[in-house]
Image 1 (cartoon, helix red, strand yellow):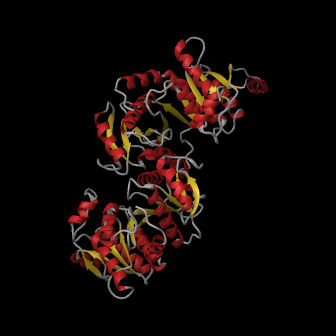
Image 2: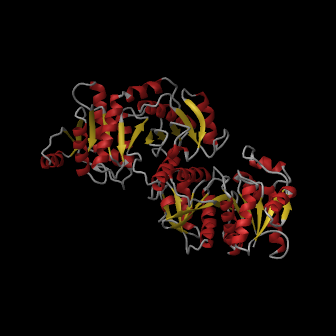
Image 3: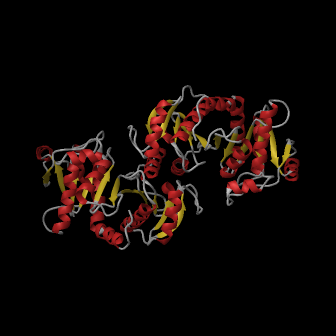
Amino acid sequence: VRVALDLLGGDHAPEAVIDGALLAVAQDPSVEVILVGPPDVAAALLAARGASLPVVSATESVGMDEDPARGVRAKRDATVRTIHRLVREGALTGQGDGGADVAVSVGPTGAVLAGAVLTLGRLTARPAVAVVVPTPHGPVVLLDAGATSETTPEQLVAYAVLGSAYAEALGVQQPRVGLLNVGSEPGKGDQLRKDAFALLLQAPVRFIGNVEGHDVPLGGPADVVVTDGFTGNVLLKAVEGATTRTDLPRAALLVGVDGLSVVGHGAASAADVAACVLHAADLARQGLMPRLREVLSGRREAS
Amino acid sequence: VRVALDLLGGDHAPEAVIDGALLAVAQDPSVEVILVGPPDVAAALLAARGASLPVVSATESVGMDEDPARGVRAKRDATVRTIHRLVREGALTGQGDGGADVAVSVGPTGAVLAGAVLTLGRLTARPAVAVVVPTPHGPVVLLDAGATSETTPEQLVAYAVLGSAYAEALGVQQPRVGLLNVGSEPGKGDQLRKDAFALLLQAPVRFIGNVEGHDVPLGGPADVVVTDGFTGNVLLKAVEGATTRTDLPRAALLVGVDGLSVVGHGAASAADVAACVLHAADLARQGLMPRLREVLSGRREAS
């Protein structure tokens, strides 16, 4: 499995990234990490560690303070473009030489998303960020956790389909899908939720109805929780702030783009980067991308 | 201070309510609790405890499974109407005989809100539920925590004004107001947040900009956090689910109705009911209601 890793992403780049790459490869030698960044920087860091990894050149990065879409468009040599170009080439050339199976960056999320959309294209009108929240009842896939603030009932259905495929790749059988709402009874919420509820009843997913805020950190009723990116982002950060748990999500999956792309937290340590790389490699191994394409092509896409 | 207490509210009514009332009065003899419920039920419970409290008759209750507005309208003798009628009469007759200074019920919140709106009337187009979240940096007033799923930029400004007055009554000087958003930089979020941000810059509050989900449980940047009732409800329940803290909010204040009304959690124990009653009495003592009327009359109300 080949992982294209953004050497310039995150608060502790490039050191935490390169150390994370070496940790991941040491832990699972079947994973090949391709470093994407300035060749001289990569060479110096590798030499200092007496290590060797393939490097693909990309010299620009998009900062936290930039408009992500504009920054990515302006910087043709940005790492967040090149990691996704390698994934596109990997899909074209198959499992042979060239390219990668999955892209990994530890942010900023907006720039990674913009790079993925620009380079890989979309499978659905509004791509989402899917995070895995560990709970006493098993993993809960929450999406959208912040890609798109405003969404549509049809997009919430697409999130349900994509999130179910992701949960299956995590080992959940027949994942149960819940609609995040202000009460568990049908008829709750704003017009977006009411319309989405009606569509989800007809969708090719195992829809179990409305779930509430506590059902994400506690788990139980649903394996997949769908919501708009505004509410999902607020919920995820509230859970992070409220908990002292250290097992919170360190890697998110971009869904709705035409290729595998995993984003880690900007504050990622080397161990966090390694966890992202290994999670990304697992998803690639389990054939998640062909499955995502299949489930989306199996339904008429609304935008 | 006279508190009108709903004998039929909450999962453990009427026993937890009456025991909570007696606890509160024992703890602070300057608080007078008026029980609002079926006189025979109240008399039997009081006799069994060898206690005496004034009782005002109301024989109907609105259940969790009913549409709150419809239920309250249909049940003319509902406790959630009578507790607010006493507050209205208290305001008319002043601090003398008759009526109450504040209403307390432990739910359901929707029914209490409907009873308050119907009986007391509105100060602002969309009343809100304000909760106090204890944090390491002091109390954070979060509103709307679930009264109205869809709101307007103008209503978010009204929440900022009302929430600031509430925070002042809690002892916070010059409370800082934050707009709940998906990032701290200006320009973040959906159209509602962008428009509200611009209006809040002009509003008679100490607006400090955007805050994020973790800023509610952790505190720090803002003393008052304003958001729509959908996001606020999801956030509050997520924090409740994620934390093992036992000091989470047990009482919420209805703001934007023309009278003081405090709502506790439906699962309230006797100790929780007592805490609600004492909190309500404090708010009445501090003259919160005249202050809320004053701050709202000081600005032109948009709906």
